[in-house]
Image (cartoon, rainbow, N blue to C red; front, side, top):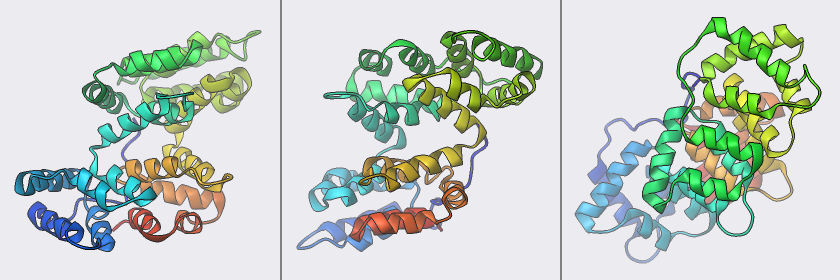
Length: 317
């Protein structure tokens, strides 16, 4: 995976789980809720620190922090606060499960979560999914997807992606991709799947550079012209996240915010899940791509405590 970027949320200095736990309990006890106190504490702590607060809450008060927050809060404000308190892999599993349960499947969510992450991240999600739902993620996913798209996602969740880099092999693999797409009539999707699901992000970066030399075009252009449907979106996501993950997530946020009606679920998921990874970089890319700040975009779409929580996460220390 590409090197870790610039987060907006960092571990709080002088952190004290007992103090924070007591302050949260006080904010939710009795009549009324002190929403600002909840925002101030939870947006300024790392997820690891939030887990310590939740543990203190259980051991000291015999209460579940998430359940208490749910009983006090509502709407999207509740959604973002609860997302902050869940362990990251558990939160993403819940998002995957929701995307597959019920009528229809939200393929965009599956793609965003699974195609943008390293092998280690995916394996953590796979383990958490089975623990939470007593069912393998691959099995659930296979029942909800089909064809080459299903094959690609299955390769990703079974953790076949390597970690090494072989510069000598990159040219050969670029030629294989060219031969499977632009270099023939029709497209051999299996070759795209194999290379893009098996090779490390660092290796893929080299392959994409070589592709330009082999084809005279970018891999993005080839994917756009040679593939279709969900497979095209999934492969494009891998390509984008190899080359510039911050720009990919900025684009996802823009679609969530700028469309007809706001896709709050996607907006919350990206802001929460990337806040400790590269949200500062995503902010920069957002402004570069759309000539407006992410803060101003969120301000225009959200209100009240929900807006204050997102802005606190985006602002960062």
